[in-house]
Each structure stands twice: as structure tokens, then as C-alpha cells.
Image (cartoon, one colour):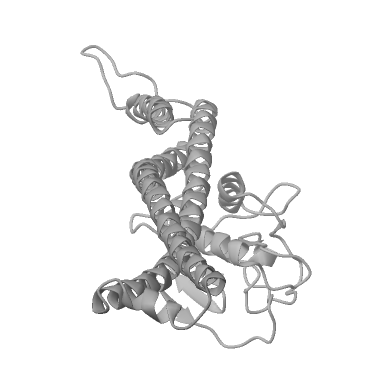
Length: 336
């Protein structure tokens, strides 16, 4: 795949991505002179979101494939630099030897070497010494020529690598920008899906929510049930979601016996979650803070800290003596 063709294909993918997003985001905002178009349902939005995520995943895969190719080019370039460095060392040694021979010939007028070779030796020895001198000179010439060949080949390879590297870097930069834009637009679609569902219950004039009673086989309130559904759809219940508990349990009861709290687990068996799962925990907490007032969220606990809607800030909690008790393996969400 050439840089030009891959660039065209990526551009086509992104154009399709943008057109899809524009259609989804603006479809409910556009009105005719006579009547407004109906708002899309959650099912329709999820279908659009699935298409968008598929296109985004293709773009991300191309981005990482380009990074791997760039790393290979950089590795080849590094090897070439090492070869050139060794060739340069050979060249420097050969050049110094020839410089010394040339200086000796210049000093003796070209005959000093022969005179020193001749002395009182017999002709056979003289010829042997002359042949040795000629062989040494030929070897140095070969080394110099070898360096020239290595140098020229390296320069050609370096120029080609630099061109390809520049193309890749420019392509990756553009693709990375497109990927970030796509991710932001995906978040907007997800936010719109969240807002399709109205928050159950009554809201007072001051913006606070009237507490609800639990219902259904899961023994949680309709408001808590909606939040559990939205988080499961958006972040995935990879290690389970625990809500109603009749007793206090290891992490304390709080709103759990009232059906107004859920724990979104990031690991099993009280183990400390992985870095990726901890990141997911932070994302769930950030989402809950963002939607707290709209969904009637009262407070959030995560990693031995608590955020309350009244203060709008985090504060440290006392040590309760364990990973689960200190909420390191799950964010806890309580609603009014």
C-alpha cells in the first residue's frame, strides 16, 4: 500500500465518518418551515453509534499499523547509521596510512622509499619488498573505494527513509487528529443516547429529587435502575454490578439496603484492578459527576475519596481497612 493510496483511503473513511456524524447530530436540529423532524429513538441512535464505532475502529487500526511501519523504518535507519559509522572508522584508518605513504614519497622525492628498500639487498628481496608496498597501497585503495560505496548506498537509503518517514509522520498526525475528532463525536452520540431516557421520579423546584422506593425483582429504585442501565451500556459490566444488599456488607450498607446504590466492579475477589480497569473506574466516576444533577445522583465514592453533589468536589475518606472497603476495586454511586 503506497502512502498516496492509503492517504486517499483514510480520507474516504473519514469523509464517510463525518457525513454519518453530521447526519446523526443535526437530524433533530433541522426543521422545515412547516414542522420539525421527529427525534431519533434510542434504537436508531445505537445503530448509528455502532456504524460510527466500526468506522472509528478501522481508522484506529490504520493509525497503529502506520506507527508499526514507522518504527520499522526507524530501526532500519539506525542499522544503516551503525554501518556507516563502522565504514567511517575503516576509511579514517586507510586514509591515514595512505597519507603517511604520500608524505614519505613527497619528502624523498618519490625515491626515498625505493632507496630504503634497495640498500644492499639482492634483487629477489627487492622485488618482494616492492610487491609488498604495492599490495599495501592497493589494499588501502580498496578500503577507500569500499567506504565510498557504503557511504553512497547509505545516503540513498537515508534519503528514501527520510522521505517515507516524513510521509508517515504527516499521515499519522492527520489520522491522529481525525481519530480524536471521531472520539469526541462518539462521546456526543453517547450523551444523546443517555438523554433519550427521561429521569424517573419527581424533581423539586430547587432542583433536588424526591427519594423513591425500590421496586421489581432487583429491589432498586427506578432512578438507580436507569443509571445502572446507562453505565452498563456505555462502559460494560465486565466484573458485575452489585446493587441491593439487605445488610451492611464489607463496604458498609449506606443506600444499598434502600435500593438507591450500586457498585460497579473493576476486578474480582477483592483484587486490586488493572491500570486499564482503574482508568475505566475514573471514566465511570467522571460520567456520573457530569450527569449528577440531571439523574439525581447524590454522591460517588472511588479510591477512598467521596464526591457529593452539594459540594461538587472530592474529599479524602478514612481508611476502612481493605481494597473493597476503601472502594479501590469499584466506584460506588448513590442516588436520592
